[in-house]
Image (cartoon, rainbow, N blue to C red):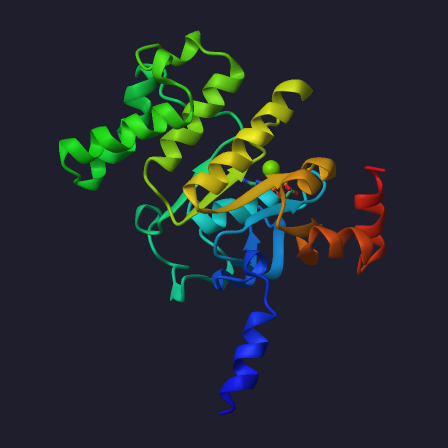
Length: 259
Ligand code: ADP
Ligand code: MG
């Protein structure tokens, strides 16, 4: 009602931290594998549009199961997944507008770098000009132009990871999931790829959920951190919240490991 006070409230919000609203809303997500393993135990979390969200937690805590549930590779046992307000829990993978980059790249060995990147576009019904535009943009962004006609087996690990990222980003998904994408790289290459990822996240203006068991990596990359343990979310918050005000003894010990 009072316009003056509305305006003054708005002007107090710094533009950089202004939320663009919730993109992903996960509620009660549970996954029990056929052998009875309870891998994800009723987790709730949200991710804001445009954020670089990092899920951390020890090996076996359910990080990969969570990502594969989001992308639709796994049928969930219960719970709901909403993307931009639409319930996608039972939607087929290819209609979800969510990309996934695997740790082991999973490039097609019989296709060149450029063919790997264009592959996913063939199913989208785009015209040739648009396919070429998108592919050339990604080759340029990932500094892969020189390697466009090479076979994947000729590439280094860092180059393969760039192709894997390009292959997902060319589809322009709303949300990109990355499952320990730098896991097999040496420390120097990891640091370089981290800078690349931050640049790509910014330039593409997209939303990332990045999984790692490395808390120092999380600290360098994240807008939001979700800490998982034993199939559950221990805490979700900004880097500062997680490190300065851990909610549980587990979070305190896990993030404390990096000091
Ligand atoms: P993370 O990615 O955090 O290491 P995962 O999601 O891979 O954890 O695994 C969570 C739990 O589910 C672990 O106990 C793991 O052994 C189990 N698990 C993973 N995949 C399967 C499967 N296909 N069948 C049965 N149990 C599984
Ligand atoms: Mg995993």
